[in-house]
Length: 439
Image 1 (cartoon, rainbow, N blue to C red):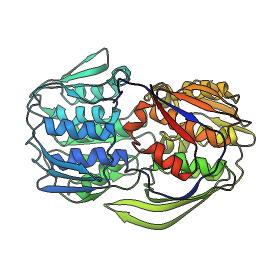
Image 2 (image 1 turned 180 degrees about the horizontal axis):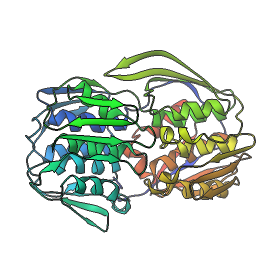
Image 3 (image 1 turned 30 degrees about the horizontal axis):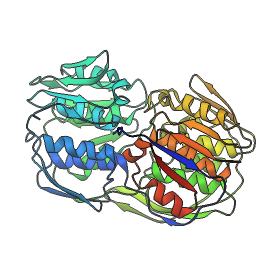
Image 4 (image 1 turned 180 degrees about the vertical axis):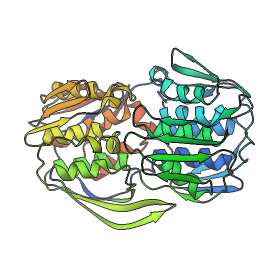
């Protein structure tokens, strides 16, 4: 949620990262634990829940639709499920702050309800494209009014949904999940075909709660009319949040850190694969499963990085991690080239342009392209960069301080609270020199 008062970061140059760190819970899984727990029969106990603004927006929206939810306290949430048809009409518009996941997944889930609802968000969310979800939902029979394809979205009441066979125009877990959640309320079966693999947390959690989902290669099928049974969900630490520390340790000499209990879902490990291709020293230990999700401790020790051509098949597996990876590229020897990442231009900000602009201000040779970026590794200088209210841009430039020649100031960092509320404290404890200025 964009706060009224602005926050900026001031990072002093140098340092390295040491010790053992547990980053906050996975944002994607935290969202889904509330959504599916609310629709389940019985009580779902969630541990490791991310108490960031985005996941809290999802929690508040289900409370507004009549679900009793206790917490969050120390990452624990208790969701008293109301069953598939137990939600009630909210008495006002549902405000989702900065959360693209909330608005896109909720639109699918609400398309099958018997009441009308309107979903709104902050300035940043109000600029994000929603036709990618409203188009398939309309094909299923939903009626959704929007502002030229952008929020607010008003989902009209009482439209019968029919299952569709939908091929995603671009790889997007949010769109896939939206269509599958609507499919639970549709007559017949709903099939989604992906052009490339994307995170599969929705399918895993549906299965974990006893709702049959058939996954066959790039195709996911769900039948309407099933039910969800409450279960306990232990949310692993978020690999997207862990990424900032992974990159920091990879670029700063004498670093050696362990990130504990991190989710290493195969649809999310692009960042590990890409850093290893660049020469990073990364080892996994204590591998296990929690609630159907694979987890591990990730150890990263400093090693010199080399520029690479990032394989396009890794792009959807690392889509949220690129701002941090661009910092790794800026510190690598040689050239790093990213292609096939158009999706980065419609995130919380145009992440390609925002990172290219900031890197140039810091003296790095970075050229944006239509679907990616070309970065020539070199020396990071000092300067004042804009995060454009984008949490991942803000944290990426904070990590750059480890290799900077001087102070870096990063503006508009309030939205870091959407995904990583204790970032400043954890970063300073690990070895960064980072100060938050409230304006």
